[in-house]
Image (cartoon, rainbow, N blue to C red; front, side, top):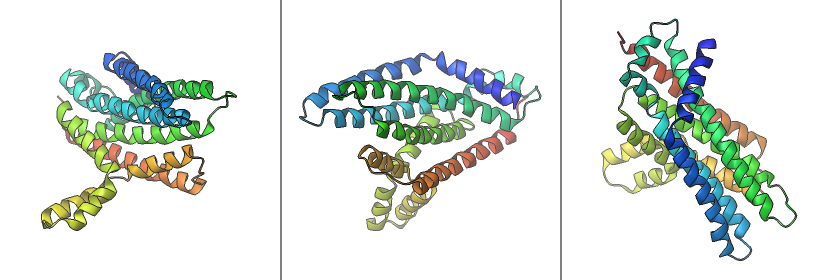
Length: 258
């Protein structure tokens, strides 16, 4: 595990130095502050708008960071030929993949905590009695769980595709995950047999990320989803993550590096 930890820390340092990361964070903070302005236009709904906009901002910008950084995780090592040095050391391919994944996962955890703390401070300040929104705190782990899935699928595509193609594939998978029910409904009304098959396969293969968003909305509305649902969602998404990391390892194992 020392090799995995070393790779994770190196990936974390490389990601933190990436200027793109800071650019996304800057715009995320600006957009969150914009929620105050939008909220002031709606009487009695300013706090609700701020929370909804803030959580959406964390999810979207966190996903963008995961896509643009994650899709270059493995490809960048190949392009810079640093992977040729790595494979000469006593490091197994699964350790390489897991280390890269964990490095970006830690970075996204820091981003989620920072942006979540920023949003929590804003909402606490805007309440008359400075009451802390625990619903907001409970929603952040669900956002982070989705970001872990995006990181895993970005890592998977980065093992065999260029960064540009990986971005397209990962973004498509992210959107399909949120539009699963719509794809299934479209498959039922389409007249093309091939299109119906493709839509049904996409629905069954990709995880239902919309369920995470719906559960998050219920939490912010004061509805407790119950521990059984939360446990199911965590196990459901983690199973996809493990599967994608295993596939990434298998693809990397089949590649020859001189």
